[in-house]
Image (cartoon, rainbow over all chains, first blue to last red; front, side):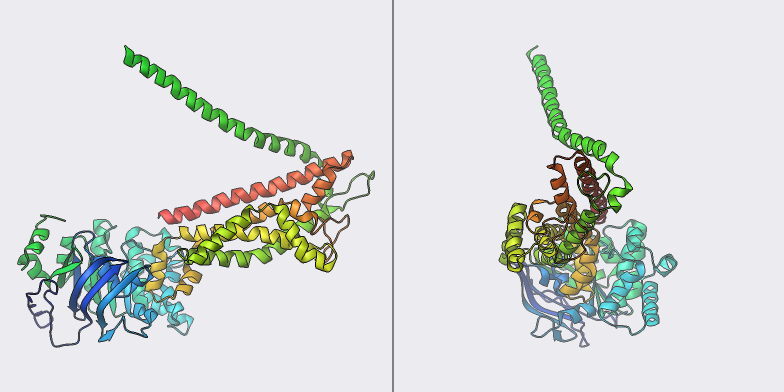
Length: 275
Length: 285
């Protein structure tokens, strides 16, 4: 356990808090990132280092910038008019905002699951096959079917949908739709999966299934999850980052953040004094 | 005491207002009811199989129908759709994808203006570009006039329906590595397709009922024609010719033609309603 997640050192710099440096390959390395919606600065000087095969939770009150930050990691904010980024985001050592970066390839590598499940109005099969088809990732029909099945199994939804692959994805329950969206993301074999409050619209049982899924997926993927639900962060994540007013206040091992936070602000938030 | 009187007065005022509203609705619906009543009652008896299968007969000879006009209307609207659907749908995609840009607002304004141009003016334009140079009326000119009328309708409905597609679907596609063009072509347009088809059908219904732009473009033809380069008959122009004629027999055929037109528009509107309702459901999910 400790070899995977050694204690994180808290660096006493308020705007660039604790970042684990483990002398091993970092998956995501963000240096002094700021983000602007027009003239409004939504993120301020964020630096964070995320290792492979861990689950990192972003917590914080509404509007603190955690979702915005998540979306800078696969450049989903690019589609917002007037959005601007300063600083550096390295994924596997490559600056994703550098010149000549293929955003399409980046998004294939850094998959995303959204707050509201957003299956396409197509069949279950076509939803999962979508990314494989548009990226021409399979060469035969049987390979396609194999990858779809594999992805649905990974997302723990195969047994529920195997007999209704040709039915509309919209006919499924909310929890199933969300797991289908996860399967769709897994199908293109990303490295990193970003999840933006993936269970916030789901009932407790569906939420539990998503959480179990996250636990199983981290063997293969690096997962970053934004959540409003602090218990959820405590349950699923190895590391937790607390955001407040566009700044990263504290970042460290989840147990440490939840039991002995070093910042007063973190403690106040976790004990429900605000937010 | 005074407060009770105020309440009573308020109630009277309220009922008066509701009454006035209800009356206005009835007044507004009366013409529609009358049109439907007369068209159905007058047209129905003349609506025989002969009406659909025969061409017009000379005056005085009994029978005859509007086969040539029905085929003509189908050809004219088909031609109009061929011109207007690609241009209209692609413009609609542009308007919704680049809705914030200056050029898009100019296009939108132009489309709305074109939509408001009296149809006879569009007829004059088509006369100028497609009749005068060739020195004779043709189905092509008529189809062009109707097509020009359809473009703004299709462009604007397409735009509005594409905007109804939840943004989450676009993000979902982009997050899977789709380019913007691919996301539009494979997710957004298919999601709005029932609505877009509805818009096209409504535009067709609208131009199928046009007379003015055809008067000096496709003109009219007493005989059956399937040539695009010859003048051609249409239900509306035929209806106009028959309605102002002094012959009782032609009047009856005009009523039947009116019934056919009204039925087409009604069926299209109902189909449009149903399809749009489905799209709205999708959005709310």
